[in-house]
Image (tube, rainbow, N blue to C red; front, side, top):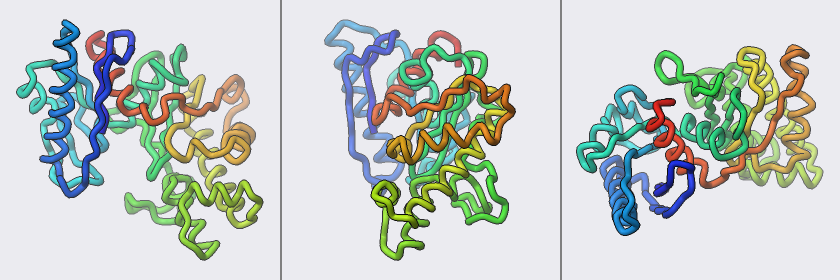
Length: 296
């Protein structure tokens, strides 16, 4: 968990990080969050600065309008927790809460690989796959703040079972856990996605096939989403996006246009995210800045 004290232009003045454990539950997570916020408020006071907004990117679905966390997929106890109200009562500062995929999208858009682009598709490929959409210079939320769930786009109806319970989602083919699982099953030894990419880079034909299938599923999903949204740029974040260009970005750039109208494909950029490990905290900074401006 990370938190930052930042200026309205995104300049980070101070940074806090905490290791939190799943066993601590929501109560422990909230306590750690409050400790970090208080430490940064103390830092701001020493600098004679006034904190005007708090931004939070949460790892799970959120009711954005109310600032209520629906649940965490990894930590028990967050169900229907009013995080916005709890923080505002604790610190007396206007607070905005969104899911971490939307926050990451805004972070890359304001400060990273999407800077200067008004139409953007952000895809975070880690253990799972999440995403976010900026269209016409504004984040697209959808009716229930669930827009951008590209990881649950069906790419093959009779494909593997996804953690969501459906078959053939993009996440079941191209997430880090899916790539590691496919490599483990086919090669016959426990492998992470990073190890599968390493074997593929060294010429292992089975690993290369696993990677090729993941890339093609991702290309199909990006092409379908791009036909619908017509973004100027696609930004890929998360651990899987750190794979060597020859195995990921280069074949993606070649395959994505196969699934797109030529007019839509023309000029589309597919790039790696720039914020890396700081994507979450800079996303929270972006949320606070844009909320203060009335742009989220």
